[in-house]
Amino acid sequence: MNDGELRLFEQMTWQEVASAVAGTSVAVIPVGSLEQHGHHLPLGADALVSFGLARRLAARRPLVILPPLFYAARSQPRASGVARAFPGSVGLHGAVLTDVCRDIVADLIRSGFRSVIVLNGHFENAGFLFEGIAAATEGRAEATALLINWWEQLHDADLPRIFPQGFPGWEIEHAGIAETSLVEELYPELVREDRKTDDSGTRVLTYDVFPIPPDAVPPTGVPARSTPASRSIGRYMADALVERIDAILRLELGTEPSVTGPDVGHMSNPA
Image 1: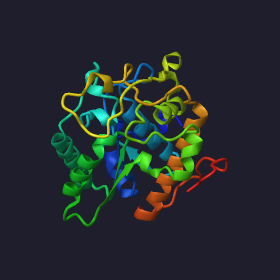
Image 2 (image 1 turned 60 degrees about the vertical axis):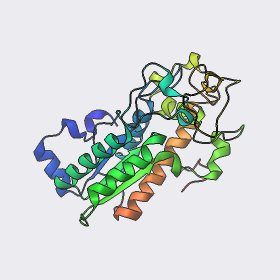
Image 3 (image 1 turned 90 degrees about the vertical axis):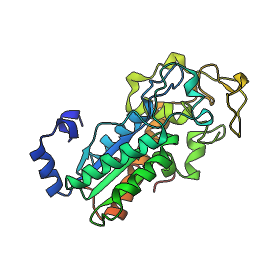
Image 4 (image 1 turned 135 degrees about the vertical axis):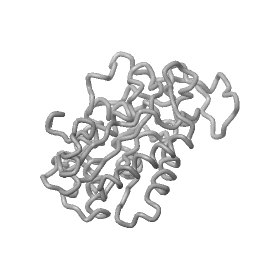
């Protein structure tokens, strides 16, 4: 599928949006961040992954995809490789993200969409997006909104396939195997393969310190390994995530896919 076949919200006319609404299309808001992702991934990796997964979902069912939301919650040291210690990490106060999310979701409902998905790719966004969606949908029984954090759709049985040397935890899996592999599958041209690293000697905290101690800042901004990442791992993850998110839409929105999705027979733990 190329972008010309996608229904991208910003490229549509109001009449085309009205037609999509009448056709019971689902609106998808991909959300991520702008933050350092080591030497090998772009600043917008989180939003790009959400957008890439949305594009693959659009191959299965009628979706309208909004522009990715790159400006999102400020990075927290223990979940982002101390992103704000590096140039390029730009974020919003959490309350601002809540307000932005509330207004976007509310306007989509006002425009007639009865199904809205917020597809999140940034760990720190989750609670603020929840508050925004809750505010936008309060008293609006005619619409259903979903908040889907992609990492929560992977199962324990998937982890050995993704992390053969052990799962470090999502909090520090920043620009590591999972994110790097997904970007390799969805946007291979954006990965600087020769710049993957395995930082060592960085102290991993289980609590917050203000200011952050220098020895808790990973030299490249990557607190977990990135060298084992591969496009094959990314393909496995993308296939699994699209299949499982599509299953959520069938369950919660009562909709069926319009086309057959990718073959996921190679997955060891399909949904």
